[in-house]
Amino acid sequence: MTETIKPFSHLYWMRFAYQEAEKAFELGEVPVGAVIVLNHHIIGRGHNMCETLQDATAHAEILAITAASDNLKSWRLEKATLYVTLEPCPMCAGAMVNARVQTVVYGLEDPNAGACDSLYHLCEDPRLNHRLRVHNGYMRDQIKDLMEMFFQRLRDK
Amino acid sequence: MTETIKPFSHLYWMRFAYQEAEKAFELGEVPVGAVIVLNHHIIGRGHNMCETLQDATAHAEILAITAASDNLKSWRLEKATLYVTLEPCPMCAGAMVNARVQTVVYGLEDPNAGACDSLYHLCEDPRLNHRLRVHNGYMRDQIKDLMEMFFQRLRDK
Image 1 (cartoon, rainbow over the protein chains, first blue to last red):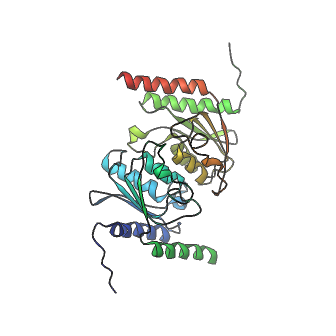
Image 2: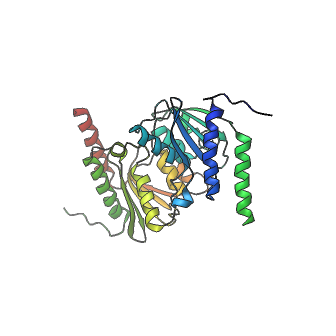
Image 3: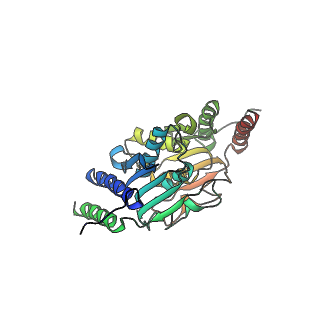
């Protein structure tokens, strides 16, 4: 069965975030990937590089935000949507607020560190100076499989 | 009157963070500075560079964490203390948790975005996989003066 994916839909863009997650997987990193989209174009990409760079701040979202800002020559990512395979942690949710990202779309929830819905609602806190729209669940099962494959491989080592 | 500052005390190290904040002030950035200390040595420094780099992730703490990790060749900053003039925002508090920083010492509270005490207690959340000790109030008045001078200068422009 061939699934038809509407161009420029959330699912369409999440596939690019998933491709980034696969790059992290190949590097032996926790497989998380992100892309930032503005006006139907990807303006920044990133995949988790914490082990490769030995830097705990090198999450997919942070690298994608830095890339997008460099691309736009502006720290303000207003009207942009960030797609990420896993629910962002507090650092990344906070970074999206700081960068004024308009919308975040994530695939799989993270009960251990998720800061959009699971542990905190950082993206929708009326006390902070910016709020994002939050959507989730896109490609959830495929992302869950990739995460489980990663942790299974770790255990088998 | 000459104030005696005990070497290697929290106040001693906060003066270096304050010097970093002054560098940000000179650049026209919100004046926040940070240093990371391990075994009586500064292993990373940073001052807010968001406008200069046009990158919302370029807070003092993030730059200091990246510098310290590069220095140690490790993303794990265990046993390190991060000194920062202003209470960290959610992004930076989350980054310190991710980097396993042992202790954070900040000067001035931030009622608008502070995530160590004011709006959140991200550094001491038992649900996350690491917790930091939190101290505050060092050089508070001097830091408050520097912040106020910055915002006064902005209004006068």
